[in-house]
Length: 459
Image (spheres, rainbow, N blue to C red):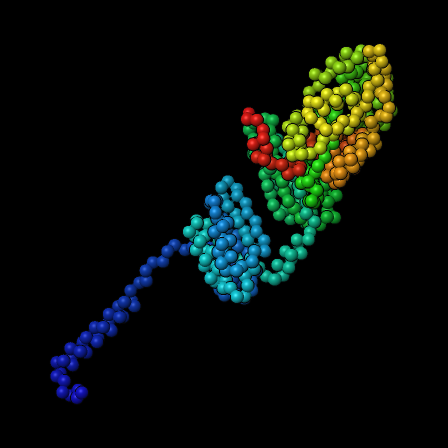
């Protein structure tokens, strides 16, 4: 077309139209962009790459707990073919803390995974924190999987921040790491009395620190009026099968021989001999013979009158009932007397009883027992015999006692517990419990209060 033939007026209108279109485009570009939605609550450590090769990533989610949160995130990980190397979750006062260590393969986009996880976390009201773990740190973690593992149980009528600070300080001072903390009791500061409080800490580190840590825990427990149990984690810890108890001052509140002595009018003298024996100052056989001789002539009917007068130890009935519920075998191995031990067997449902047979002739105590005497060594032998007859490893045996004559069986058992015991016995035993009743021993085998509620009568 000959442009010269186009009227000047038409040319002017065409040019004006083109200019208006160009101005409109400039105006659109100059307009402010629409506001984006609120920033997602996601945090990245400095140096976090936007794209990835094969990476190890630690992801931590926190916020209000709700059913299905773990499902939401693991489904996203599965969609992206991500491997979970480690996972841990805890809920404290309805607040979730969920951590996962992931291996993101080179064929997957970390950017895409990040976007999917953070979008879903934002929708669920959670915060997310991501961190790429360097290879040397991953290797250090793998090496740590082979550390020795231990369970530290803190028991008391209540557990305070100061007590936990002391315990955790000892753990840190010996280079051990706390991997997990669980509350086993219903509360840590219960209002009802008497009540139990318990916290279990899973720790890992160098096994060579075990003996000095035990010594420090024993001292701290005495100063803080709590109990601190230190166990090596093993396949046997939650798979005990036999509990063996001393009787006097363990299953019952008192010593039968001392109560008999009171009836015979020689209570003070016999009590002094008993205390010396319990402290290890007198051999059991010698002290037992001396005390027995002082009972000579006591009428048999007065002996049996004790059956209804000596109360059970705090928590004894609950402990034995629970052990029976869980299928444990139970035994009484006592340097006391058979007539009382048999009565306890009937009352509590104990499986096996071994105790001394008080000799009674013509209706009176002779001042002797029918051999053999059940002393400390004999208790250990009987414990081994019971375990062998039941096909139970000694590692699966728990022995409980308070006196010096209990030390051999406490040392033989997989776990020996000094219960409200003399200082010598506390030093020799694996564990020492003084602040709680006997039912506190359930915490040492991992039983939680909430586990028992469906099986106990309503209060």
